[in-house]
Structures are given as structure tokens and as C-alpha cells.
Amino acid sequence: MSIENVQVIQEVDEALAAERASVEKRSEERLTAATKERDKISRIGTLLRYIGVGVLMAAMATFMFQRWDTMTQVSRYFSFLAFTAGVCISGLLCGLKIGENKGARTLLGAVVTLIPIHCAQIGAFIYSRVANGVYESSYPSYFYFVAPTRTDALIVALGGLLALLPMAYMSYSVLARKHAKRLLLIGCGVSATLLVPTRDPLFVAGLVAVAGALAYIGERSFGSIVELKTREAFVARLVPFIALAMLIGRQSSLYRPTTILQGVEMALLSALLFGILPQFFKDKALVWASENVALLTTAVAALLFGDAVVSGFSLTGSVLAPLIVGLPLTVVYARMAHKAREAGAVFRAFSAVALFLTGVAELVNGAHVEAGLISLVIGILGVTYACINENKGTLFAGVSLAVISLVRVCFIAITSISVSPWILLGVIGVGTILGASYLERNFTKIRDSFSTVRRQVAEWN
Image (cartoon, rainbow, N blue to C red):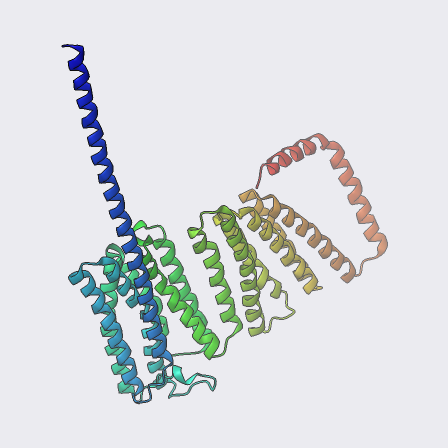
């Protein structure tokens, strides 16, 4: 083949390659333009959905605060139930007829957030008959949901729940099909606490504790499931916390708040800061900060619980008072030290401090031998725990407390028992001589044992 033919073939190949490159470039440009257009439309759709959710929230707020002078309170509730059903039907139609899943999930996510509100209103109707329409004088009029008769309260409760449960299940099924039953159980279970017709402070504190435990267990379980990390599924996971906040807010703002309820609230806040929020943080500094704030709220919760128990059982000034506050806090801190992701050392240190201060408070609180013996036992328990878990801080606190308590017990015993000075001095002298003899005889063994223990302790946390 001649050189001219080879050159012609090369030129043709180059022209074809250039044409292919041009076609591919135009295709990429069209694809990029189409992608940008889709992204733009998606952003507009997302914005419109947010606006729609905001309008729904405004509608719910209007329902709560509008006077509704022309309607009875029972009719008012069923109007809200019809509104919820309308939102649910709109979501189902959006998914089935329009074929747009994002709008459907947004609407059905709004439905599940209404579950606690419905339960609060139904609970108010039930309570109105149990309490015979008696409310606190500070109760806002727009929160009145009073059933004229028990039959009306029963109709509202049965009608509302029978209509709400299917809507809730359908909504959860669309938001997270595989986990719908568990989400429904936790969400409706916590919301059901709003139905209980009592406002007794102690009973409500127990309800809050149970509801908080359910919400915490559910979130710890759901937080590790990939399918439940979408925006709409996250809204479904929030339902128990919305119900819990409503239960706490209703009792704290409309009825008499108590120390025990405040203690439960602080304990739940600690659980939120320590066990739930760190799951959403990628920065270790944020995890460390959240756990340290939980340390403070845990201390406040222990003080509130302790104050409630001490005051309720008239234990002020008794040898039990420091134990009721200090020992639970010590144990909780020690447990949190094992579970902490970033602040384990801080919790171990404060567990040791809490142990030591509990014993010191016991010594200061009581001038009797019993107080010193209790403090001594606390110190020995601290040393035992430290040896089992290899914790230097707790070991130091336990040993220090045990020594101080032993000296205190001896001092109380000496001052309270009538002993002649010469007998006491003789006992001290004989003990000193025997101790010196034992030390001299076994010095090498004692020194080696001490060195071994010191090396082992140096490796502890």
C-alpha cells in the first residue's frame, strides 16, 4: 500500500474519531442540561412540599387556637379527625394515582405526627368525665375538650381511635413497610399515655418514665436501621418523642409540677444527650460535649430524685440521706463510663468523686459510730469495685474514704468510751512495737508486694 493511501486512511480515521467525539460531547451536554433541569425541578418540588407542610402546621395551629364558637367541642374534634383523614387520603391518592412517592410520603408523614395530638384531645374528653369537668383555674380555654356526657366521651374515644389506627398503620407502611408494625407499636404506645385520665403528679411521673423508656428503646433500635434514615422515616421515629413532650408539657404547664417529675425529665434529657444524640454526630468533639452535658444533667436528676425521696419520707438529717443521693449517682456514672464513646475517662473520674463525697457527707451528716461504719463500708465497696474493674480513680477514692472513716470511727469510739489514758497509751505502745517488728521481719516481702501492686495499678484506667 502506497504512502498516499495510508495518509488518506489516517485522515479518514481522524475525521471519524473527531465526529464521534463531537457526538459524545453533544450527548453529554444534553445529559448534563437534562440533569440540571431535573435537579431544578426537584428543588422546586421540595420547596413546595416544605411550604405545604408549613401550611398544614398552620392549619393545625388554627384548629387548636380558633374559638369555633358555632360548633360543639365534640363536633370540633370530629372536624379535626376528618381533616386528618383528608390528609391521609390525599397522600394515598398522590402515590397511587399521580405516582409521586415523595409527596405521598410527605403527606403521610404529617398524618403520623398528628397521632399524639389526637390522643391528647381524646384523653382530654375522657378526663373531663372522670374529673367531672374540673380543670385548673389557669387552664387556657382553647384547650378545653369537655364531653357533655360519658356517652359522648365514649363515642369520641371509640370513633377517634378506630379511625386513627388504620390511618396510622397505612401511613407507617408507606414510610417504612418492613418496620411499620414496630413503629406503630412504639409510636401509638407512647401516645396512649396521653389517654390515661389522671393528672396525679406521682402517677404522671411514672407514665413519663415508662413513655421515655419506650421512646429511648425504640430510637436506639431504629437508629441503626438504614431504611429508617430517610427524612420521612425520621419523622415517623419522632412520633414517640412528640407524644412524650406533650405529656411532660401538659403536666408541667397546666397542672402542678413536682420535684419527682422534674427529676424524671432531667433523667430523660440525660438519656437523650448520652444515648441518642451522639448517634447523629460525626464529629468526636460534639459527641464528647454531648456526653459531658449528660454528666451534669444526670447529677441534677440524682439531686432531684434524692430530694423528693428524703423529703417524702422525712429522712432529712438521717444516715440514709447521703446514700439516697450519692450511691445511685456513683453507680450510674460507673455504668455510663462503660458505655461512653468519648468521655469515658470523665465519667470514671466523677464516679470516684461521687463515691468519695458520699462517704464524706455521711461522716459530716452523722456524729455517731453508725455513720462512720457506713462510710467505711462505702470505701471498701469502692476498693472492691476498683480492683474488679481496674479503675485507679475509684481505688484512690475508696482507700482514702476507708482510711478517713476508720480514723473517724476510732476517734468516736475513744471519745465515747471511758478508758483510762494509761491503758490507751499502753495499747498504742504495744501496737507500735509489734508493728515495727512485723515490718522489720517481712520488709522485703512487703516491698516486693507493694511494687507489684503499684505496677499493676499503673496499667489501670
